[in-house]
Image (tube, rainbow, N blue to C red; front, side):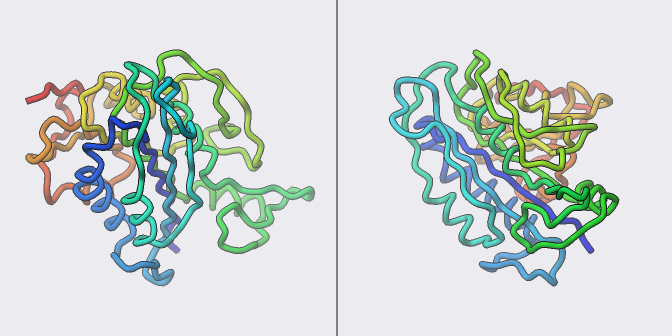
Length: 277
């Protein structure tokens, strides 16, 4: 049976994203989502292959321009059209500071939302936090199931992150895996610190931005666990949006395949720090 895939889209909700959102959604995210789901119908056919779950986190800023919530999250869904509908209906407001976007909180919330095994008092596993039903598994089954699941995150940002570390809620991670518990811990961290947890638990992290922010490149690098290619990256440039920053995880081949048809591929050993044309 093909491994389940979990894709979380973490979106900048500040006003800085507004002018670019329609282009990012149509020319990047929709192509990626339809490619990873393997179809364009409203609901995925379970017999067609691996189940794909889609999730959304929208964060705002810590600045005075934020008049709403700091962060909002959607439940997981397998409804492709419904999810794209959520994305198309997003509203953008607030922000405006030089370094005040709540990227650390957004990335941390995505980690908390990823599924984790749920232990019972007897040491076996009774179901998982996936909404797919309850099945009893042995510890070995749990580990194999946990390792087989793919967890991917795409950060879509148009603002620089908050530079000062803030308290964020993150899941418990042990030996490179999510601990079999719904418990979390509070930690003082910035966006790069949270991104390092993605590398620690083998969840991929990609970045899409309409601006060439160095801090976003640093977040992407922190979320990688590939020492051999440090400083190098697979990046895509769309001739329509040559100024966009698009940094794609090597652990997420579907995202690369989805964009390959419409963009120019820049593969290693090209340097990470690409200059604007």
